[in-house]
Length: 186
Image (cartoon, rainbow, N blue to C red; front, side, top):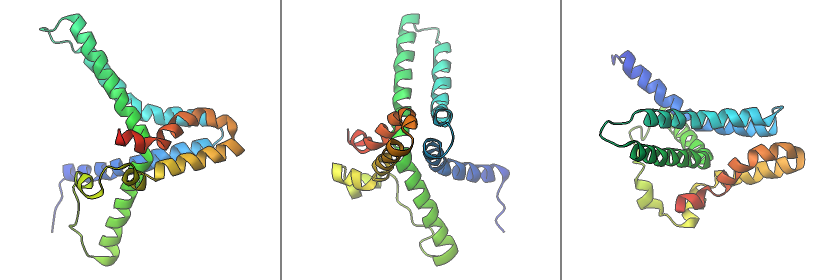
């Protein structure tokens, strides 16, 4: 018997939830742009999911001024921190399809190993080993991050032909997806 505490069960559940979040947000965006009635509420919802934690953190930074720091220095540091958080949020948008594919690939691989092959159950690679194995050339990045530009190109083509009004809301995020490998290289 291997009794797992409630805290450990919660951690397992939360890890599973976090691994499905990029795929869910990507599907949510694509469905919102292509199939659901109005695209802007769906786009704003996903933007909110990604930006609200940054907004809360920036607000907390702003209102937590240490006594030993002058107001001007604190405001400058808070502004710099806020800009950095929003850059990270934009980067999260850019890498969303890649993260979705990466997470779903890991889920499928784990499921096959646990349910079918029963082999390589403890095999894993640390995330920093990708730098040593695949390199960081532009071709290597496009080969590993192909899903973002592929979704961006196909959704842009579909929206141009079928729903040009939705292209206005989708264009900024589709642009991030299209150029994500270049941003990662930079």
